[in-house]
Length: 282
Image 1: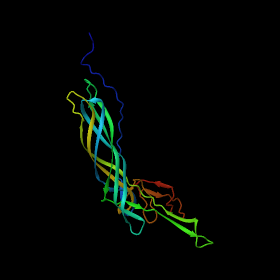
Image 2: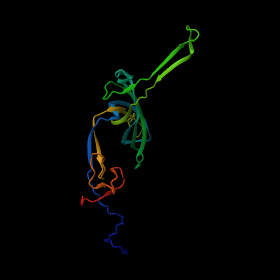
Image 3: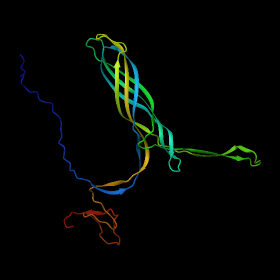
Image 4: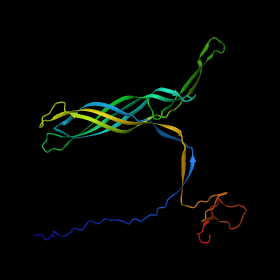
């Protein structure tokens, strides 16, 4: 007969813990001043919703009797914008893009979970990539892209001894190359509308070895370009709690005074010999 008491409580496993020391929290002093900075940041050129229609036939091995779940994600490997219409910026060689073709490419990764014909068998899993590619005509921009045009010039010379004959072995070249910020894309959202079915109608107890998918994808992408902008802003400066020494016609903090054992005719504002004293008696 067992001597184990069923009402006996098993002691819990010991856990090492430590008490946390509370920290003081004080607000940081912020001072503000007007500023007109020039910044270089990515700006949004366009944020379209592109509708992509794809049809795919996916093999299933082993054959399936029922589809349980399909998980989808979009991966982009191409977001390129090709300008086709421009307007000159002033008298410069820089242009605003007024119309462009947007090329998009990538794939839809699908994770298909399904049941096979095995009795009490484990769920099967198939991962496949469905590629897609296409382009869109962009005529409206949130911010117009900027592109600089490079230039190349070539000069020819006459023969020094015969002014009627050109020299083909002597030329002058001038090249001006402008390096532009490359527009780039970001994936924002993907909305799937999908119809999956077996190309051959299967009986309730039968199996099917392939799956036909008709997908309508509403893909939202963001196209950006790094540009230089002049903005009006408020500059904020955080003042740490340590006392600071301010020179010239300003103030000396109450708790910090310069050490001057003997007057030398100059005020040692930049001396490192500073002494601290309490508020009492100051």
